Length: 454
Image (cartoon, rainbow, N blue to C red; front, top):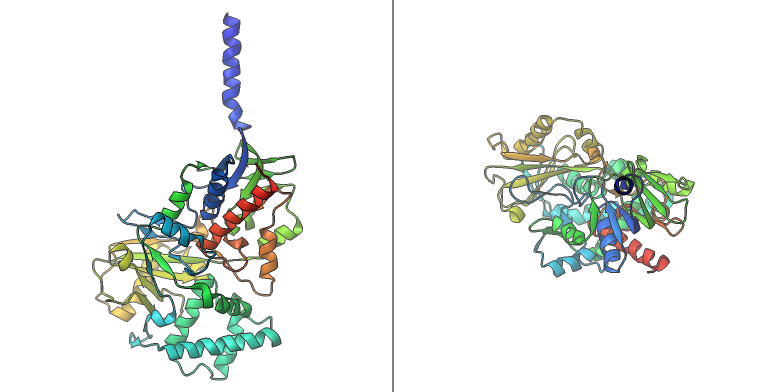
């Protein structure tokens, strides 16, 4: 009897420790609990697949990050439902399904209150904006034939040298450029002229941008319901050399028939996940070749509103990236809050600065327009997306002298019908948007269901 008890205890012990070497067989593993991963996982789960989501961080959402530490929701990451008229925008359908209230926020430079370097308010007429927009667009279109390797900066410099943009005050021109750079998450020196042409065509039918009352995370919270999500589970290796797929989290192995990889491009570029066999040269070139942008925010809560009714503000500075673009969040939060967005190399540089340095530099910008007597912020939040260990940036952008469509198509192509890739960087035309990330997750879920039917 004692021998039987000993053997029984030994078997129980072995079974309890087996989880450190081999987990139960899951039909599908989704790597990453951003909106792409959650969208894919929910679609598969609702279709009867057994799904496990492995998320490296301690929270779901990825670059959708609603912060409630100030007592009300503030967006560290995604701010808007962009392109509200597109049929492909699945967020609009979810918004209606969940009865989420939104507020349309005009983001064109014409919607901004402009201040020049002297702190004087400057008006921007629709005519001035259209004139700038038309001349740059025509020059970019011409350069696409005669100098296709030109950057957007090359085109703009040529126009300025010929005096074709001198009709507008410099602050108007700077606001126009910063608007482009924030959208692209990159500096104009690194943006191909084709990006401007493509965006102009896209925006003709895209619609408007909507802010969300109550937090953008309402979308990810809904998509996560009923899912098996394991937080603090950074994937280190994906082995697809056998019939199925083995996914490793430290010393734990998860086995499945297929895996959908939805981690941010920055994680793939840094090689944080090893693949066995190694990825093809074409796949690795796609990962390394797509441009990985950077946008950050400083968020200030003030004791009172000193900026009046202006919801969008641009303040001209020596460096147009240096806390020049501000948006009021008062309509959404009901609090006197201003966000400043900054992008590209300036954004990357600020990630190495202290909070005090950033606050002082940001307040210098506001005081140049509103006076030295305005109050210091009562509370603040500062993002450093490039330092987030499992994100390492903001969103992908168009690259110079490369075939973006080819690279993104290759990145989104599955391997051996069992390793699938989703995420905004795999979107051909709408990269950088939350609705695009969701669409790619649903796209890969449908592809998996076709290749691996129940």
